Image (cartoon, rainbow, N blue to C red; front, side, top):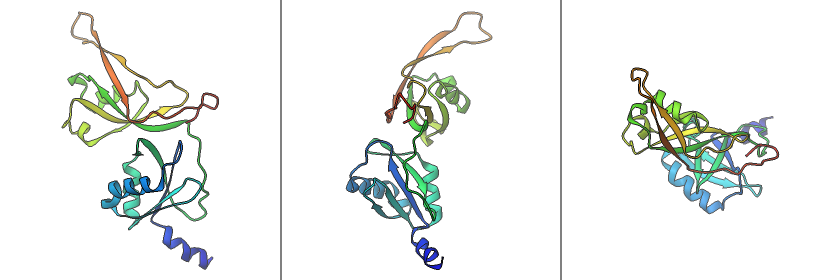
Length: 194
């Protein structure tokens, strides 16, 4: 027990990650991780031959901050991250739902608030959160929202938003909302998972 406890100390501030689709070359993952997480406390990147990457951070808070700020894309592919813990079994899970960053274009200004964006994003999947530029309305050419999508549903492309007014007796109109996925995961049609 003492040997295991002592050995665990080296891994306590580590995230374990893998890619849902094919793995990326180590040098590419290392370069991207150092670029985006270097200022967040990333110290070292390691990998094994089964497609798992180990991201060692300076402290537990840095690990938690990176986990909470996700999901993360490396070269257009989503990396699944887990906090390392003793007795962790390295296995790649199948997922029926995953978070994906989506850009929504052509949003009417009256919908540019938390409730409005959530309403519009729910046409694509379950809205999780928006990026800081969207939340602060510093960029209004499109909204960037992290949305949980379901493998049992088709990916939504452009869709119509009906704009009406309860005070106006005239019929409303449709506005086409354009959808751009930062990454489109492959879906197994048999098992309905990514």
